[in-house]
Structure formats: structure tokens, C-alpha cells
Amino acid sequence: MAAYKEEAGAILQPGNQINRLSSYNTEGVYGWPGVEAFELIGYVKISNLSADKASYKSFDITIPSPDRRPDDRVRDNRTSLVVQASSARPAYVYGASIAIGQDIPAGGLAGFPASPVTADIGGTSTEGLLLGPNNSGSPFGVPSTQANGLAAASSIVTASSSLFAQGLTDTTVADLPFTASVTTGGIVAADFANAMFYRVTADTTFKVFNVNGVTSTSVDGDGVFISQADYDAGKAGYILCRVNYLRPALGVSWNDIQGFIDFASQVGGTDS
Image (tube, rainbow, N blue to C red; front, side):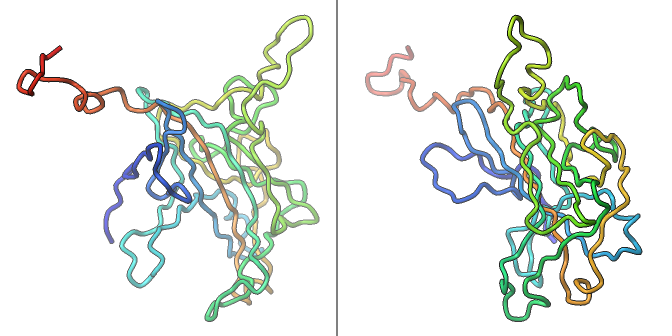
């Protein structure tokens, strides 16, 4: 298996054409001059039964390899979803989305173990599956009084009738980090609770946590599972995850200008 090189993806320039940014290669695009924009998409596969649910509460997110032949896969799946950042080039997370995968009916191809291949995910009613940054194995949650933009980097779906049903989905808790209104008579801190990006200055891993609510700061859910019938049919539950962030572009360099400078060695050049 070839070793994977982090941040090997290109930053696409204006005029480049592509259908989707590569999450696997951490591929970005110059959405604005001087700003790199990224979208990372991955999944969590749930295939355990109820008896083992207590061991299935916290999940790393798989970024699938572009190489789809399992018998000849040059690059293996990546086993975590990481927002790339540093103190010199911080990342500003502005979006997170979570969903329970739902296959198209009869969407399985010949040879697949089940059609459709996805399943509902069992859980405890009113508990949630929270997508957000990892805090040493625990969620940060989204505090009722915000001071750091976690609402822009988190999303949650809630179980009903003991199920996280297929098709269940949620966008970012804050939707988009824009100010929608201010308090009449004077701006207060709460006006900006959902209007902050989540800023990170080091590589930051995102995970999925089974929690009692969006403010939870521990993995306090009961665990998740699939039914015996779905297990026997070869199905699995899939938690789908998307994280969007911005990062400053690399600083200006000689390569950005050298082709436009006249040199004395050129005909008519003056070094000016």
C-alpha cells in the first residue's frame, strides 16, 4: 500500500474545471483571491448489533479512496477527517452537515449483498449524533452561550422512535456564520452567537459522537446499532459527514511575478 502524503491536492485556479473537490487529496479552490476553500466529505459505517451498542458511541470519519478496486487499491481509505491548519495559516470552519445515508431503492448492483444497501440506525429516542471537532476523544458541543464559533463547525441529528432513520439530515447549527439581526438600542454579544467562524490554528480532527444533546461535552449517549434483519441481509447504516472551511493562501512569492519583470539581459530590458 502506498503511503499517503498529506495535503497533496492542488489548489484549483480560476478557469479550472472539476465536478467535485477531492476530499481525499484535501483539494482546495481559490474561491476568492487570496483565500483557499475546502470541502471534506466522508462517512461512518455502522454494522454492529444492539448487544454491542455500548462500544459504538464515538466514531472516526472515513474519507474514501478514489481507487475503487479493492483487490488493486493503490491508495487506501483515509481513516480520519482532518481540517488542515497552522498558526501561520489558520483555518476558518464555516459549515458542517450530517445525514443518515439512504440508498436509492433497488440501487444495489449485481453481486451486492443487499439492495438497497443502507439501513436505519437504531438508538435511544431524543439522543443525537453530533458532528464536530474532537476534544481529546470528547465533543466540544455547542454551548448555550457561545464565544468561539462552535455553532459554525457542528451539526446534529436526533433519534425518533428509537431510530436515526435513513434520509435524516441537518445542516450546520448556525446555518451560515452571518449576522441576521442586532438588539435594538445596542449591540450585545448574543447578536453574534451564530455569526462566528470556528478558527483553528493546528490540524483538527472531526468526529461523530453519540450524545444526549447538542451542548454535551462528553460521549454520553447509549450507543447505536442496526437491526438483526438488516445485519442478516448484509446491510449497514451510514452516517454521512461534510465539513467546509477557508484558509489564507500562501504568501506572495517570486513565482507570482517573475514572468512579468524585464531584465537587462532581455532585449529592451532595464531591470526597472
